[in-house]
Length: 466
Image (cartoon, rainbow, N blue to C red; front, side, top):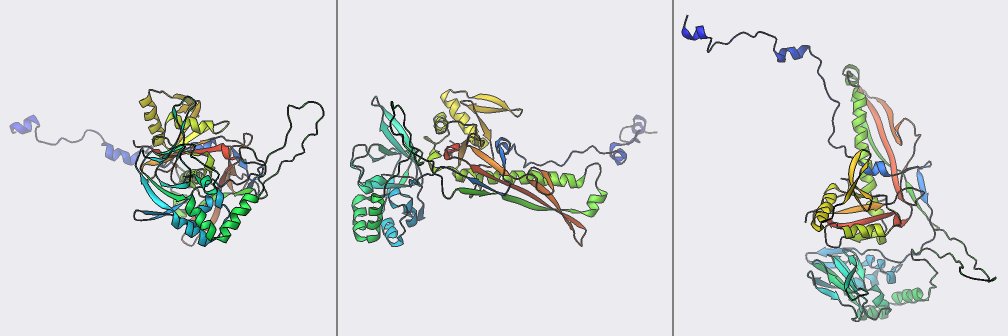
């Protein structure tokens, strides 16, 4: 026997017990249910009060409101040249309802493009107000003078906004604020002289302006609603005013939207591979999760009823300096009598946290549904990754009051539908085809309604990467 054989070095020894690889063939593997990365917290679906829309339609009746023409203007561009889209000029109060396409095109052609760098003054307080300005791109600060002579920011204008429209009607002699470019701005301007020249040349425009000036201006409150005549502070027996509450003649109706898919499972899979987990149950669970994610996405982004697109223009503000600041959130809160929660992309909430840290401010936190969330002025900031982030790394933040009793934002659904497995979500058997594949139609019905305009506010053009 050699020395190496005696020592056992270099010779494989036989296993003394069963190996783990072979033992697994006789073992029952412990396994998890199928996992899904796309599941989010879905705070919006949790926080919205859901209202039954029994007929599939929900009508929002409001008091009569008068249009004030405070929309936003759109633009087109070819290279560096920017033009206003002619029909969009009807968003100006003076041109609301005017439909002569030729005159609108002529007006659009008279606008002059101007470029301003950050810090440049566009108009100065006290100077003659003889132009209307359209903000095609950039951010403009409206600056005034406070009671004690200090400079105050009255508001921020951005893409699509305008100012000086009253100058076209000759009702404003001098500027009562200074407009200063906060960023590089592209602005289109039209002088009163050019407008008057086109008015003389267009009989349709003259008739429109005369009719507009001659039309009686009905009494209205500061929200634009038809006034309710009241008397107060009187003594004796004066004649009390008669009144009534007028309603909108064509109130808005919200139809339930739908998200659907057809789930397909082979009969062999459903029959043979059903233990220890029910294959159909797991397939349905993950499909329903995906539908709920799509539902929240639509409630935020849908052009017809999504909250980002249905906030009133008066309830939309722009970030003053770019990142979301405590000042911006305070202004959002000040525009409604009650706010239940903010909704923002997680990166937006992180940007707000950085801005607070820069100022030495420490926001509070609160526990909601077993989770700790940041709050501002007692209003929670809830994350929602369905709020888009644009290519320029900007986003938006929503704030809302919810519930029908508070005239807030509500979710709409219909419970009790056939084959319902969750509220307003049904799973309907569609049969088995000639390839032995079982099909199920999975449908979710939903919508959202803003009962009064101040129930929903939006902070726009937030920079999240500064």
